Image 1 (cartoon, rainbow, N blue to C red):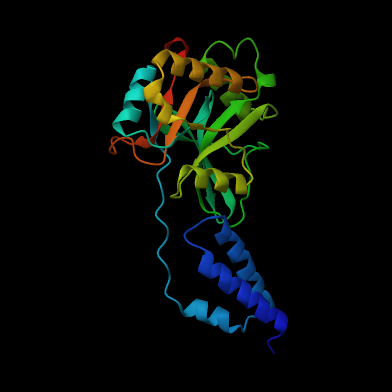
Image 2 (cartoon, rainbow, N blue to C red; image 1 turned 135 degrees about the vertical axis):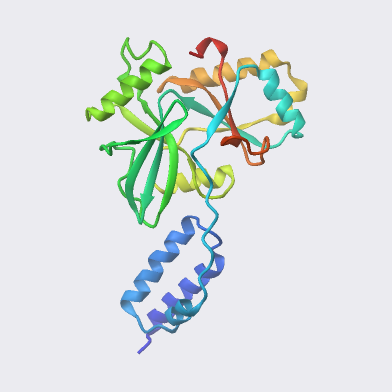
Length: 275
């Protein structure tokens, strides 16, 4: 017998089904309600209707094993913005550390890859508080940086980026993960920047702070002013972690696809901090 409560549950699921598009946080909520309905009323007509619907195609996944084009001259970035008619950009800190890809299959963390001179290698899975072992309802890849909290730096790790990366790698393998942080920056699902950030937060991951890049102001300010703004932003971001530059993210492609280099993300670094 279908009770009033079951009918209400079916209506909630039907409403969520109509409102959900693609793979996003509401989709995982929808799946949880659907599983609950299967348990309390397996004979539901709504379940029968869903099971007879043709499978929808899987969402197109985005490649997150890309490299980043680096700029050291803010005038080149200003020209890039001008070429693309001053689109909406965001900026985030670029942390000094190991670039990681976390791979999840059916909720479980199954593999970790780290970038080493342009190649991706497997990394043994260790317990890091900011790397969740499970993400309910998720299968896919998450890109981010494994880095040190400011309290974890010593005189040795302050030397240069390469030394810092080695220190992070060795501490990770030794299980000394108390000062290690993983900050998520991208996801293999399609979506604009804000959607990606919201999804990563929904998964319980640490994300970098970000601000809107005022590209519309570029025509009215000199390059030295923009460089000062970048320097101040990096200095402020470096109060709690080590920052080696800025990442600029665009929702529209900045260039055609080429040799697995990101088309929507670039990095700005001052020549003085390039090793």
